[in-house]
Amino acid sequence: MSENLLLALAAIIAVGIFSQWLAWVLRLPSIILLLLAGLLLGPFTGFLDPDTLLGEFLAPLVSASIAVILFEGSLNLRLEEIRHKATLVINLVTVGALVTCVGVSVAARFLLGLSWPLAILLGSILIVSGPTVIAPLLNHVRPRKPLGPILKWESILIDPLGAICAVLVFETITHEKAGIWPALALLKTLFLGVFAGYFLARILILIMRRYLVPEYLEIPFFLMFVMVGFAATSYLQPETGLLTVTVMGAYLANQNAVSIKHVAAFKENLAIPLLANLFILLAARLDLNALKNLSLREILFLAVLIFLVRPLAVFFSSLRSGLRWQERLFLSGIAPRGIVAAAMASLFALHLKGQGFHDAEKLVTLTFLVILTTVFLNGLWARPLACLLKVCQRDPNGVLFVGAQDWAREMARALYEEGIEILLVDTNWFHIKAAEREGLPHFYASIFSDCVLEEVEFEGLGKLLALTANDEVNSLSVVHFAEIFGRKEVYQLPPSREGSGCLRATPHAKGRILFGEEIDFQYLEGLYRRGYGVRKLRLSRYFDYEKAFKCFNGMMIPLFLVSEDRKKVSVYTADYRPRPRPGQLLIVFAPPQRKI
Image (cartoon, rainbow, N blue to C red; front, side):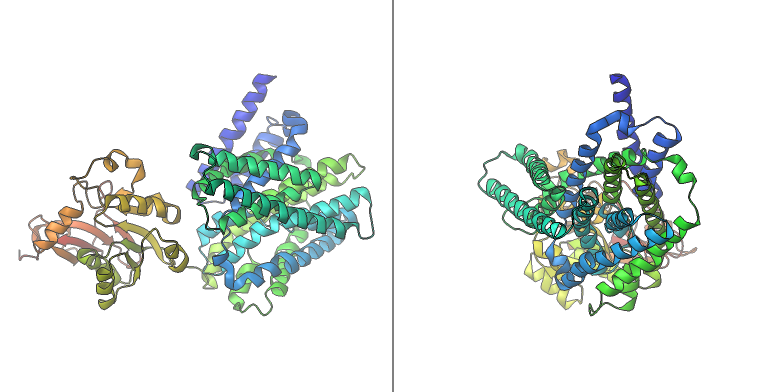
């Protein structure tokens, strides 16, 4: 028995991580492949039966995993992102949630024939969005501000609030309590959740500020507080723990007393396998016969949910918001459901089956049907819809230059003249003033300053080039911005050959090496003083790379290759040497051109 249990657990972990990797390769929302993997392991093959595998531990395991996922998501909630649209977010998680609950309940009652108690419970469950689906979807679509932050905040805030509403409905159904009990329970939940989350966050900040915990125990301490806060408040009031951990994360994300970046990174790494395991476990519990017996009624229910209920929720929530009709239409088209909806439906079904609700399993089937449909459709049409409505950002091919010395400005100017977005960031006032005189976009600050992340508009920027004389600044810059641009698109000059060799011994802490292993700052500076400069070469059938090479007697250093339509920039690195084609623009660092 223990061997079978070990094999099943190993299969869940392995298939979950593999599914997420495959989703990245195929550029699909990971939730789709995770659900398919759960169906394959569960009802299709019978290999995995979560109820038999975990028994009574299934429900608390699901609840605790959701708490960690919500805490990780709330650590990304920064007030600066949504300051000017906070009212709209509040409306979406209140007015919009009420419209969604009423619309789904009415549709479930009259289209699906559910009893009113189960219809209202389904409506309260489907209030929630899916932050674990919204985040990768926004990374793929890249909508213009403020649409991205609005959707992110809505998805994270609506999960604990929707879960609380669903629990109140569930408690009302099962205990048949009337009168003012639901209102009192809601007030108790809100007060306890907000107070406990704030109190625990303040204790954590105090502990970190006074260095009462060694650095290697900081992350376990955070995890301990999350679990204790979630369990304690849920014990005092069911499902209040979800609100507690969300308040904790949001407060920690918006304080400046201590740094939580390392904690956020760890939570993200923990949330990814938790998410994979949860979806596979819950999908494996689905009834295959129920999926086969879907009819036109379920299709009509989905159509009403997607094309009527969501647009109405956005319409009433965005009145007097100042959003253009294109932006409101885009918000109406994005509302995928995720892990919290699946988990709540599964938990309620487990409890309701023992209390005489024979249709309780329909909650699970319908919820997963909504998840599959909304995720698939949103993943399919989100990007085309954003482009059609002209609310998507331009392709992020622009370049952020760290360092604005003379030859760095020449590189930036060569790209800028071709319509490529650039931004020069430097702490040297004379370099920044020179960039201003030359009409180049610039920002006077340390690249590590919070104001860079808060005030700089990164729309259109997709690469970072660290070109300073300080090897440590270059290495830390690429680490700092790897989360924004991805490790593939952060570059730096090789560490100085005259340095201590410490940075050279830790390649994992660097970005991709620019131009060549030996072309460091001192080398480029020396060439610039000897008359080298940035040159642009338009290639053709009659003037190819070999002839360009001869023009400079083999002394040129390829820097960038700009595509024929001037929309894509390839950077020459030590490990990547793109081969130019006719019609492309080759940008090199070379001496004055000689005649051939």
